[in-house]
Image (cartoon, rainbow, N blue to C red):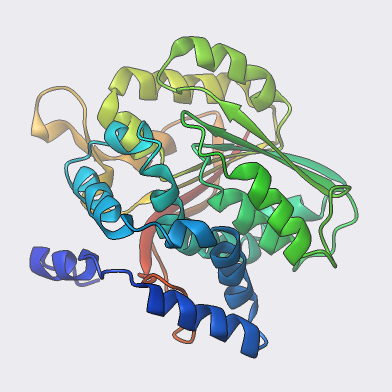
Length: 312
């Protein structure tokens, strides 16, 4: 696959200013047309977070978020309550669509959604993308039991209760409080004390997800990364799944020690864990958005690596 140049990557990631007219046109589109499943998901986001789009400082806050990501200063984003709502509407839509697509394409995950009672622990999922994506995928499978999604994060985005209500409302023919529930679990995964309190949730879950999280933790602290992975490996029950989705390319390059010769991709470290059976292994996956989708903000195709492990 041809790698994009730095200039091409910068051009693709540049910020397109948001304006109220685009949101008004999107609202008109929602009211006039019968949406596809993907568009229906986007409509759920735009309606639920309508007030966020009306923030007069929207563009300046989004610029700050992009700048912090460029320097990998993640704490400046996730510890700032003024930036979190902007982060949600910028990233939840595209990622939720990606997660929905992933759950519908991987047979093991489809079967998991069809089982009687399923508990899913989503690490670093406070923005609600996993909750929405998994819920939207559940609509497309034959399910009779209950699904419970635990949304763990270091930051309280304050969106999970409203988003859960919106899912029950928008997908009311399929999902309701009796068959879909959620909860918020707060805690910094770089804090060993929080890992101890996480063990019961890991033990009781049929699936643990880590989406666009492990790279950030490795960047912040290699020790914390090692402790988190060790906690999952030692605690997850036999037969349970561990799904990892994270940035492909240079963002997943990890250096062990001080020498650049000891440079690995993050998934190389995970693949070496003997306790995990690797069911799905994709070093570079593209999720390309259908061209007809309508959303107040640009939707950019996503490239990521994917691993689905099962505890031996």
